Image 1 (cartoon, rainbow, N blue to C red):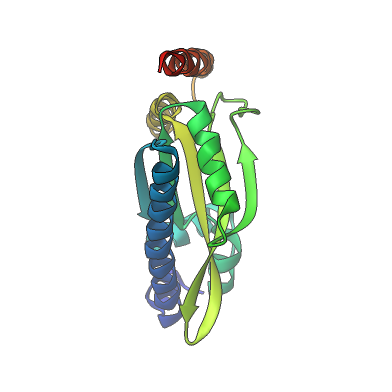
Image 2 (spheres, rainbow, N blue to C red):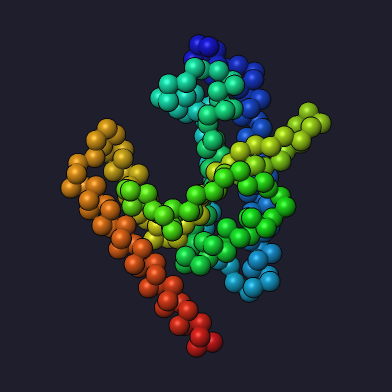
Length: 207
């Protein structure tokens, strides 16, 4: 299918509407779950939440980069991060509290998850990823829409932001010394997160 035809097609616009509805629902449900957790525990584990919806143009360009034929079917099959939500927490324990909240919720189905905190990527990337299926009502039917949720600490988010800038600066090959320094920074981040968690536990013991 031609790029412009796919971009402007009614089917593509229908897909985008579904993603918009799913994102609205996901944001609402996550906020409700976090507020419920805060009420029960007298503590809010979240520093901030960011969300974004990939544009149809970006999604089609990603299909092209991956070498897939431009079609509605491939948009549905191969683009898993149209909806992206990032939940940033203070401490590692908060990250796993949020994971537990999402897993225990009946609002979503968990399609997959990857714990890059226990098992960091070779680059040093650390975070917790979940792909959830968000139920929406469309044309009198229930449909499940994919959404990616990333959960990480403030320190992990800082590292990921730097990594993103470096990837943008060197889109093809990152110099070896830059890779090594970035990886070393990840080790420092991991050690810092551990120390901050231990310090927080000590402070809570005074209470």
